[in-house]
Image (cartoon, one colour):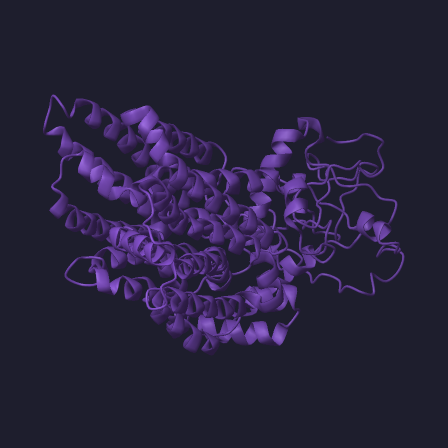
Length: 615
């Protein structure tokens, strides 16, 4: 649908097709009356009166032609460079502009799909070969910490004739751990360029080469006596994770039917939990937790990456990327046939063409343009809140310092690794629950419940640590609260923010939104990992109240601002935010007399035929 057009709804059974375009000098229809501001006669075909949508009025396309320097359709042919929109059928005439308070109607037939083998296979492949590595690298440094420090100390002694003091040794190891987050930050900033140049599938395939390079650095570091190789390898794995943490949900969100977008979108978060669990299991003393195995332990990541590199080229590129950005209708159709398993993909193609036409006057926006674009300010703020809240919720403190937390609760040191493995198993169960319930309960209940549970459990840790000296059984409450934080996180906040980033934006803004969300994610990840030890030393047990406050505030924001996106197309979601923006910023007597811009939001320019200006 070209920028500036809105569809006039009609009753089923009456005349099909949209009303003919008015002349260049005609006014917009007033939504309260359905008549022109300068005439008492209704517009549209004779005998086929227009019924205005409650949310948006019927808007003429005349201003669009005047902006482009063309004559209106009433006086001559339309724009030669862009095809005229096809007439919608009676049952889908108002589907692109959902009425306020009435839910979101579906365009034409319900664009739904079934879980086909190619769709499930590519989801499992990219989740296993990319997302799982992020979780693995988060937890892989816990078990071999003492062995790596001993290697650093021995290498320093061989080079300079003396060992490292305790302080510099701790600093060098902390750099090895935190460089992963800095690499992730750099990777997240490269996402927009990579997905625009190579596509979603191509970016994931090429990023797998980084893991092979990193595995080589870390695997041969002890043989070559080079701590620098460990640090470089960790930074490269962070670069890979920064890219994939944004590209995987972007790819899956674009290839999944809307009725499966939640299930497939949470699959990467389940594999992140699986990666954490794998690192905890392989780090046991009976497996790769011994001193001689730590280089192999760090470089195991090359196995999933190699599998992805070999098999991912067998699956097509994102159909939305092919059609909307590359204008490759044939390639997009073939990709849809493959993923959806049906030759009947015309409804999906139609929906993507409508989005392409609505974005025909817009280019892919940069991060700076996204931050300055007032038409998507609520979506941008929502991405900032949920992505920053996900990391500032305290989950990184739990993952990075699980052993320390359990040691403070009084668990014997010899039993801590097995207790940690138990928490990893709970992560997997919680992740599975989130995957299989998100399409039933929706995104909002999962993320709100998850953040609320994390906030309550963070306060519970504070209370249990304060009372532990007088009530010994409080140590078990601490363990239960740690388990509660992990469970609440894996059920919703672990994956829903990435899914929401894909759903809240249309094609032109989506890569920039992932850059913003991914950058904040990694910055907060690094901040919590670096500051938490000092916060714990200064605030003691009360440090967890900071995380409690963050979790509850994020849950409140989601409850008040972010709508439910389950089973809605990207166009419908953008119109929901457009409606909210119009209601919040437009005087009541002017609502219904505004124009749509190319993104589906209401323009704040002056009304046609009037001198008043809207805010």
